[in-house]
Image 1 (cartoon, rainbow, N blue to C red):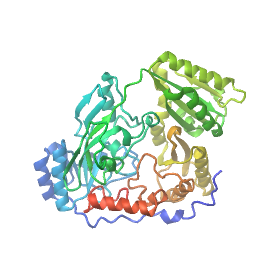
Image 2: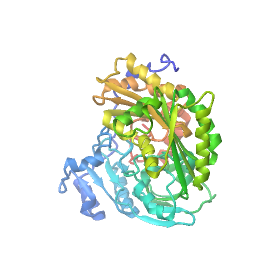
Image 3: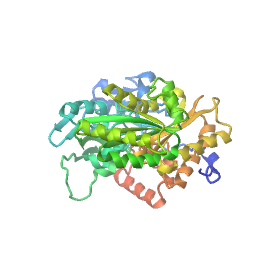
Image 4: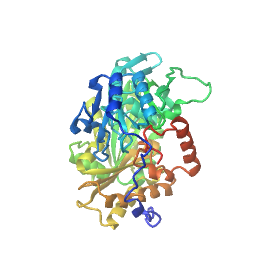
Length: 506
């Protein structure tokens, strides 16, 4: 068990964060609107300023994140349709020193796409054109505003799939995915976007269009500049186009849902599954009992017999993707038989999907957790990387922290739970505030959780990014040398500090 005495000693220092300085930036004026009106049609400009006078309700989808946690202050939203329009807007903003917040589907979890002070929001949703797709190579070239699910649907008839899959796939955009280096459910099989993105088109902070929209698998000519923009969260430039390698669609997919008596069995099970399933394993997802029970309470299931589940403390979802259904099912059945007949079984019970409908229902339990959490109250979401052996220890330590501070219960924190990707060491720690966000709960959680993660040599952000939420916590995962070189890179690309200011680097 992790010691509570070594962390949390400075919690009260972070209960009220100092406001970030934006004195170097100018606010959008009616004169700026007149210029933007020359670049964009009226339907692509929203502003509370005259003569447009957009209502606050119409501005809300762009100024408030989907969790309702971050509330922006932008008085103007621009929706360009082309990289050229983005370039013209950015050139004007640079000349006027107006801050810009690039925004995709606004599905992020760390406040990275919300205006913090007076910056305008540049939403890329109108850039939704597929530029090309080669069914032989599997290379897709598309606008940054394309919705992930729409791209999946576009290439599905060509028997290809996107290399990433997210719970927010119906609303997140590929440009935002790349700008945050989104991970998701397929990373175990297909790797990160640093490997699958072949090229990018980026509008730099001075309005220059950097065209690196290559469709080459191999190009070893100098610095690979595109890598700087993957995960930069729009602080170095605005991704407007992407070239990405899509893998062939598997001909056979199956999944298994298993109940385990305790967390200590998860890692031995992972070893057994990797050994027996080998190359066909495409996902290994974990959730604790609190998360499972919450899913059931919201109608996701049941997928297992309650009597057989008994006192199970955690659950695992395993997916396979292969080219031969019979071969894959043979492997899965042999796996289940060996698990159930072992002298000391690692599992209590399990089920293997028997139809496409059952396959989807098993995945629905895992993919529906984020929405269920939102229905339970206001979530504090911590996306961290820690050693696999400490997943449950981290959740237990946070729960004990809430209990010890008198914050556990319906009056404050109703649930503390963990789920995530065992295959890549990514824990999604969720702390649900039943009555809403409060400074008391936040000061109890931070920097306690960040110190807890740092004590395990983990990362304070595994896949969600830093945004505005974790700028003060970056030093828990990056030392001074790393942070200083990040600042130097930022100054080279954006000397005026207009590009998504207040994000990533404080």
